[in-house]
Length: 456
Ligand SMILES: [Zn+2]
Image: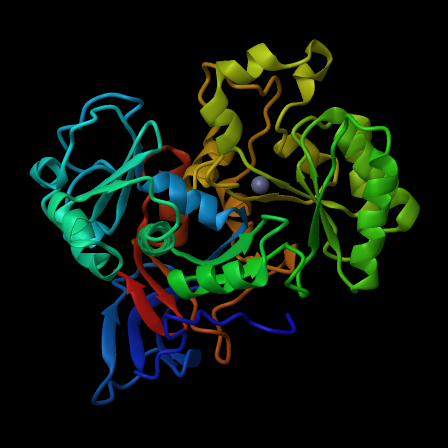
């Protein structure tokens, strides 16, 4: 890794020393001291210094922080705290739902408001605390609650402040509201991911521009890498379509352009045809370390053998078929039926397989993916005809590798390594047995990024 992205708005590196006491590191009970964002000592019985922040591990396993190798951060954030009324009335908030009210949950965007007469006071009755912006389904009217009115006050007229109603908003307030909403949504997603031990994200959106990437980096506590055009130290995402006459040439041009930048490629290939094209182009151009195929959702044995021969990594997402269930099977071409969303079967043929979320399309919680890939997909609607599971330790390994080489060596907890850490709530074998058995998808006691405790 030539550079490690900073997280602008969050001060990435904590200068306050952190002492984690009694953690299992590779099975040995040790204390771990972090300072200036790195691990500076790792030994049994470290002495406590004045000013140390103490974290009692109580025998939990200490791992490198988890890296999600394929996620769409902005899209995942946006779907998490917005509410579509689909023309219906205002809701009664349900505790714990995204619509629930609490000031610290940040901005809520409501769309599809059907009632023409809603005012600031009506929204306040449902959401007295968190800022809410509700958009009428016609698009002609926005209504703000009092918390939102207060945050946007400098952009509003007196009348708008009083009623909370804005007519034919044409960008005067939208930019400010959109940004505040996104910041809140990203912070919410970042907190949730931290609660699952995630410390690094690889954004797989190909057209993410530099300003947006910086905005994302400044809004979540995780380190964020990108497969897009503006970053240069990770593979470049190229989407393989399978309907156009010039697909081959465009794909080849895309791969060669990445090579000119000195980059590997991440080829998005969902269909059988797209995967065949991806494999053929990589065969012609030649493979470099880090080359990967995203999804490979239809992969027969012959294609698997070719991927293994070429050394191309498959980055897959078990939570997508788990979510789609029967709908996936109903949509599928019969000849593709035996080859859907394979994992263990590809690995058995020598393909390096790596898990990820593809959130918001898949589940952002890594432990859900580890549980599905080791315990199996829900039987009703599972696309797997053969056993495609693998062991939970290998599944976890997907999240412990470096962003540039998802199938490369696992990062280690060691002196000098970044203090990006995930502390589990028990010994590793015990936790993995519980996760694989469906017992929990939140076995994390604490998460540290750059020496800073971001979840506990
Ligand atoms: Zn994706």
